[in-house]
Length: 414
Image 1 (cartoon, helix red, strand yellow):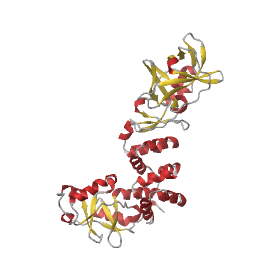
Image 2 (tube, helix red, strand yellow; image 1 turned 90 degrees about the horizontal axis):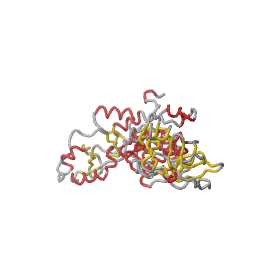
Image 3 (tube, helix red, strand yellow; image 1 turned 90 degrees about the vertical axis):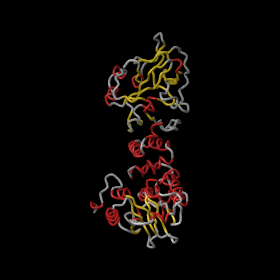
Image 4 (tube, one colour; image 1 turned 180 degrees about the horizontal axis):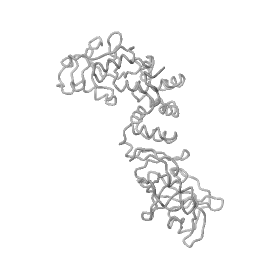
């Protein structure tokens, strides 16, 4: 395609003066991330004899499929040393993983394309086609021809850097923020370890926790094991308690103790309490996050508490009302609360139908029967004194039934 230059095709090609005198062979093209949607080439790495010299982009007269022409033969013959922030397209990006943000998928770069805009050569596209990859295995004349296959606009790409490079994906691609945590989880599961860690650390802490909750258990454990204990503990502490407990159960005792020790004491105590329950009892897969109100509380005050719990919105579908001794009175749906007068007392919202409850030691089958029998969106878990200690939603049960790919359903287990 006219106007595009193949980075893979340039590799090994001649670097010459405008008059045609060859000065060396091209090794790589140097860019810097963060210089706009389409990064500009800042220079070239050229093999001159046994040395690898750096050629500044200002010395490039033109780049074509036939090679590079320079407008100056003045070269710094000292061996090239990568400076902070520099990325080598052949070494660091070609054949490496990238995130196609528009398609929410992990891709691999078969080729990269440059285009001249004014006096600059900009990185404008990445080819992910298999035919393009196979073309590179052929004769040099085929490698240097530009026959784009499956090309992605570079503006839709979130790139990674080689482990040895100092530049990081400091700011996540703008459109990464628009992806659902489940889509980001799929991306993480498809990435290699270094790329996975880089993408995860580029996300806001709350988003990172939401993404980990969507990951398959085995992949989540890999992420935790790859992270430093302090980082892994911080990620777990931000996750919903029931999701964090599922992950902690899969770890060796020593690893589990180390992560709990690195967490804030209140969080560690809460998770330790949940771990004490058997995995397939109600206490083992409930969420302990409850919004609790007294009969005399004003509706407006309770709504204020709900706003403070917005990060746990997916685990709250009602407000628990208790008496002066903390025993369960009712479970008021959020809709009833929202349509009530803010000056009303919670006692005015109490009444049938009464909430469905299960004991903290109830087995999975009993929990399923109770939830389906009452046609309710959730169950309250109570202790022996009828004090509410947690809530079980339908998705909590689904997580227990099939918490990871490849695991059998309960009635298939032997």
